Length: 392
Image (tube, rainbow, N blue to C red; front, side):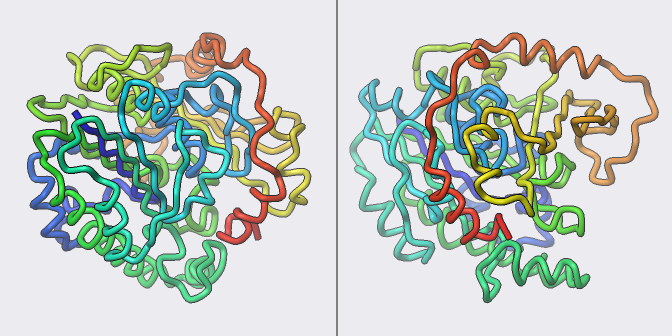
């Protein structure tokens, strides 16, 4: 059995043909994935690229693996690394990204190499890597072209695209975004899938987070709002019918893939979504927004990474019916429904104690007791984030 894991950066839950065929024209992708199981009832573990990807490959929440915000540079010691374990199990592993630098400091278990964002060139690179007759391949591909600025002239997330949002030109931003998603699906992902024998590949395609386009949150990574936390998830497991249930989380991918590929199990709060449906405990998400305006040496210092900063952290605890969100320090839990685009306040009584659930998760993780690694160099990470428009 082979594995293809595809991350489409900034892919909103509603930016796929399965949910909005009238808005997106992706006939080739739709044809290739017609038998894939799809859910738009998946929530991420965070709303920034680096924390989410470390969670996907470790099966741990951000508070467990240590990268709690896009600016955080240090992981905890001893966290699981999916690609490394696959390599030890005899798989030939490969990882490629259209923006490999933004994944700096994220340890997935193998080196992430650059792949061209030009569709023909990138596809040729990936096809060259693939071995048609090999049944022990694990390939990760991270597509960045769907991330802000969606083709804006200055190529910065906090540049021209942000000015369009501030100026009220949301329709222009959404049109650029829609075109970027269509191009990625039709000219990059669909041709890659056409190259594969589906009977020999487990395939997972997910968005790491969404986009919001408001003055409060010009693209993502500042809140845990519905628009940035809810993501689409496509699953294909040969000869199995996936049952994602009423709700799932990206924290579930690692245990699901471990079970499918017969890797050793490990301690995680995620669940195998291929298994029989059962009552599940509430999930968790968090984000420590990048504190714009602070000097880089304060944002990226080891002391800050160890939790000694004054920056805020947002937490959400949710099940299929209710979602509680708090901004700390000093906040109180706000209750909404997890799948409501308007995120109106919840009128019914809470189904669970959000503080207690979060405490049980944090106290119940053995990884929180591990020390932090040295991490990526702060100057290097700062330059990468600034170049890509995360830091102004």
